[in-house]
Length: 248
Image 1 (spheres, one colour):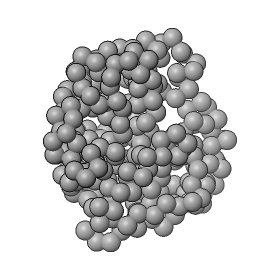
Image 2 (image 1 turned 45 degrees about the vertical axis):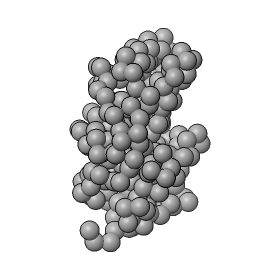
Image 3 (image 1 turned 45 degrees about the horizontal axis):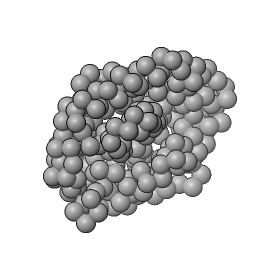
Image 4 (image 1 turned 30 degrees about the vertical axis):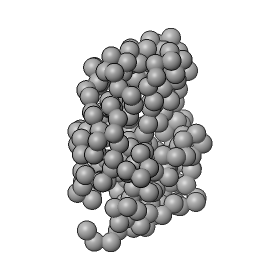
């Protein structure tokens, strides 16, 4: 693969609450020979504002995003949600702003933004990343990665190639976990019911670990599993793919 300039967009949730996920992405990509940068100017992708209807307020956030990641050949993020925002929502915000320069900048950064599994499979052309994780694992495909990005079976293919893993199917896997960002606050009862269904399906698998590509969803379902004392850990896909025999 020719040398490419790659930047990590770590996301707000990971930066504030799950820093090990960002570190895992860097370890994984470096192990695969990718020199990855972390632009210090990055902030939010703007999705919370867009999803709640504050499109005008999202304009400066999108402008910060395109400025921070200008010039990179690929922007990799461990989040289907944030990748979906950059690829689909940023153009809506830019068009609304009436700023041709922002529209042009978004046209550059949007298509170059990849969710982690997309970058590994489509850009690096790899499924066996040399990971080792000897545990029983089940995978939850998050809504934005599944429906907005169409990542398909890329995460499963990566997981199936992990040495020592026992990957088991999650019943009703494509059903939403119920988090949905502000949905969980505005529709708490529905959110809890959906999360309870997801947690029950996870327990039914007998898995030791629930894995997903978005920590926001894992936070929601993982909180329920923890309160139920289910004995199931939650881990981001990046952390499993970064694991080796020395660290697992």
